[in-house]
Length: 143
Image (cartoon, rainbow, N blue to C red):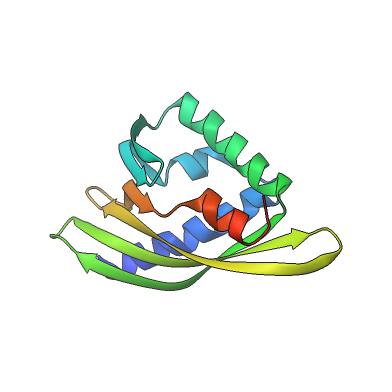
């Protein structure tokens, strides 16, 4: 399972960066997620479905990231914690690079912990836990 999850996050990173560049393939992006998912951050816990509303929210999210100057997202490190033969937690250390007007680019490191399952074929994300993204962006003068 480890090899397939590592390849999965390579695809995840590539899809994210293509979407940042405006080349969104929503079928490809939505295929990364299970039919239902959970998300937790200091802002709260939410549940969702992989449906047209998710696609719309994701498209708006990528537009927001472009608007605040997000140039790329790169995986610095990936560590897996197996749960059973079909599930794991992928601890992903990201570096996001932002363009800033009349200033050098800034790189911000952060972690997201993804709940991943592999049942039939490819792995999919069914949940994630992240820190306070808005506070981190404010701290670095991005928003």
